[in-house]
Amino acid sequence: MQLQAKYVALALLSKRPMTGYEIKKNFEGPISFFFEGSYGSVYPTLKNLEKEGCIEKRTIIQEDRPNKNEYSITESGRVVLAQYYEQPVEEDNVRSDVCMRLFFGGKMDEGEMLDWIGQSRKQHEAKLSILQGMYDQYHQQMPKHQLLSLTIGIRYHQAKIDALLECAAMLDNHKEEK
Amino acid sequence: MQLQAKYVALALLSKRPMTGYEIKKNFEGPISFFFEGSYGSVYPTLKNLEKEGCIEKRTIIQEDRPNKNEYSITESGRVVLAQYYEQPVEEDNVRSDVCMRLFFGGKMDEGEMLDWIGQSRKQHEAKLSILQGMYDQYHQQMPKHQLLSLTIGIRYHQAKIDALLECAAMLDNHKEEK
DNA sequence: GGCTACATGTAATGCGTTACATGATTTC
DNA sequence: GAAATCATGTAACGCATTACATGTAGCC
Image (cartoon, rainbow over all chains, first blue to last red):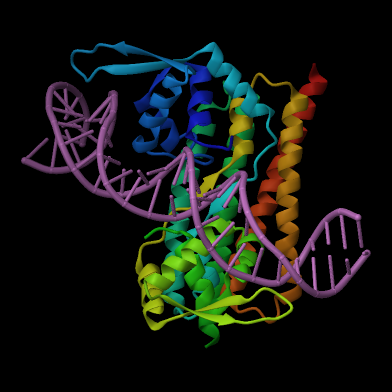
């Protein structure tokens, strides 16, 4: 009963019916600051949810494009989701490659470390700009709670970028002292 | 070749020999802001690394306590670790239950959402205080690079706590407006 | 008397990643 | 002509989680 593709997909479908393709879009964009997943997780998850009776499939035939399978949540799916929300909040799960590298990479030269920091900064900046874009575009019509988590995401990436910049500055100073 | 227990264990052992128990200690404490893992991941990982020739076991017999298996990194282990560092930096992986709940939980009443925020805040505060403790205690004798990643960890938790507080305030305002 | 720290492991299960496989249409 | 978008899936593999299993010593 922990945070996994199953519940996120269900939550997405509780808003409106969607195809696997659309769910994946969400996994990599608007939602990516708290959950990510690939096709290899989306389609099997959808299949399982259907088997469990949590969602229903409707095939939409399209002529110029591949057919779609649109899924919608069932009553029993809503129950499962509600049970999820009743559980205590799980701790955030983080795995950070940069942090590991900085923590252990003491013998590397500063250039290497600065490069790592730069790479990571770019990654965070890219994500931040997605979130910032969402905020700028939708913040007026967005329900408050969504704004909340968006804010958390923005803060998170911003804090990470700031911290990385600070780290880079510290390394630069260190270099000059030599 | 992505961030997994294997490389973190190897990196830990590159500093000094350790037992599985000690590695687990690191996974849940000093390092937990960028990697976490349980015994079920530590011991099998160690076994694999030994099989691959990356580490060596030495059994230390103790009379008043259970025997220890102390592992140390081998030359070939260092090579594997170096190859890891040569790879491009991976993006951070995050899964955040609170964010998901806030993002989707629009129909919940404010009380429920405030409770989620409170739970999450406590979790982050607990972790922050571990890191802060480490900083206060060791920052003078700690090598710079470790200080860097510690700083990132502290910033991360602090930002999360701030954002959560802000969210709670927004919800409170919203409540009063009713 | 009970909890925590010390100490190591296995087994089952499962979620997720990567790579594979296909193919039309639109945009640059 | 190349790349991106739309669209769905499978198969293999593997890392990790949870629960199980055991036992002493020291501290409150």
